[in-house]
Length: 254
Ligand SMILES: [Zn+2]
Image 1 (tube, rainbow, N blue to C red):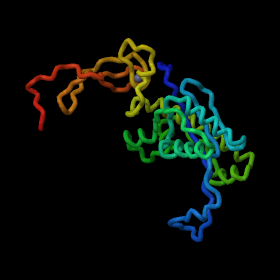
Image 2 (spheres, protein in one colour):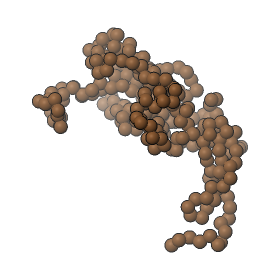
Image 3 (spheres, rainbow, N blue to C red):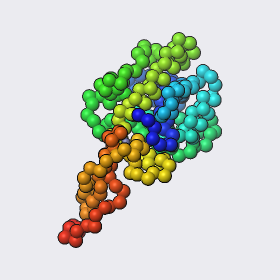
Image 4 (tube, helix red, strand yellow):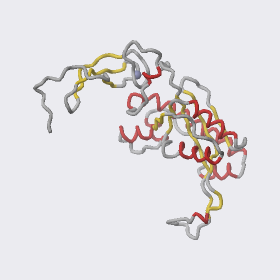
């Protein structure tokens, strides 16, 4: 699909190292913060700009500057697409920014595809790997489980190669899933705002002006709107303004 707007959409995925703790039990209900030996940290990130096939990547094997690089990407983005990133990736990176003395990046909208998947569909599993396989979009890179993370934490070169491949594949899957789910995304920032001087009705989710009117939508009160549908991506929409003077015989419940 051609990019019809100027909104800078960044696809992003990060991988982190677990927190290393001492514990008396293999079934701990609670680990005291004083038993933390080493706090978890970000291992690497991968990102792609929508409309550009380049897969960007940064890891802790370089130096701390890989955090500065992802900060710059977020600072530049109008919207960031992720999978559970509103609870995990973004707050994790915010912690890294704070620890590194960086200010918050400029505002960006968050498009969390896990939220869309949970809200709109009843897949047997909402994991990215499962959903992408069910949709025929591909699968995550196979790996040897936690041993891969331990290998990276020990600086094993082969483990890092696999981690980089795994991380990049995740962001490629994310981009494919975004395109696939586009008309289902409810809280998508309105890309009509990023189209230069739109002269025609513009799709909220893809920016296409190839849309058609499709009847009337009545809300539960007393207003009615023109209903639209995008011919390019299929997003259902309505006019912003109420289009009909409400008939005076339509009453309102007190
Ligand atoms: Zn569209």
